Amino acid sequence: MRIVVTGGSGKLGRTVVRTLRDDGHEVVNLDRAGERGTVVVADLTDYGQVLDAIAGVDEHGSGADAIVHLAAIPAPGLATDVETFRNNLLSTYHVLQAARRLGVRRIVTASSETVLGLPFDVPPPYIPVDEAVTSPESSYSLAKHLEEQLAIQFCRWDPALSISALRFSNVMDPEDYAAFPSFDADAALRKWNLWGYVDARDGAQAVGRALALGKPGFERYVIAAADTVMSRPNAELVAEVFPGVEVRGELGRNDTLLSIEKARRVLGYEPQYSWRDEATG
Image (tube, rainbow, N blue to C red):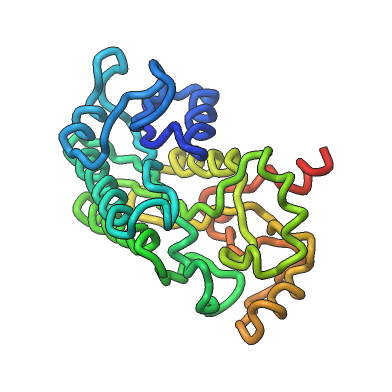
């Protein structure tokens, strides 16, 4: 396919672009930053630029078969609340609207684990958490929740449209794993996302699988690693930090507490990378 990736110069985006190209797709990276010659510079808060860039820019060809929308201010606290909300929600509306006008009907968009209730200062209703939990606690996560709502309505307008919202956990590269053993000393240090993470390579896998499925309609998926960032057992962590929270099913010793059951069942997603393997070589 010819795939437009927004935010392809970011932490997850770099791996997604490389993986899609390795899989034989033609990829155009729309971003405000990146190495010259490898990116089409576009401000996604400007609808005209978004429409023009997806339609095709000079030597970068014409049109798109699919869009992977990753571009965003990537976390709370990096800009003012108002600017984070404005930038992220407006950019997503522009991408979805441009896709609709240009007849692009296969879209994968980056939602966020923050929609699940991070930083869990209010404990989750149950553990492991899954896609049924929606409790935005910041302007960033509120925008992500509303982006999912936009996608639902766009799919209602066009029943042939496929939009997959991937609720990515904290994205990590292999060089990040050296710090993980230090997390065991304080269970509260990483409780903010139930000790979750996802390897960027597995994030890219999820994107590829969602694109390949291309099922009409809207679906959301939690995308995380198969394990936690901790060596300490889950039962011990939950009892210490979230006493009284309902536990649904088996926790496993170090299994992810951000449920990826739906992504496994529907997308065929299966994490291939763990910090434990990287740490042991």
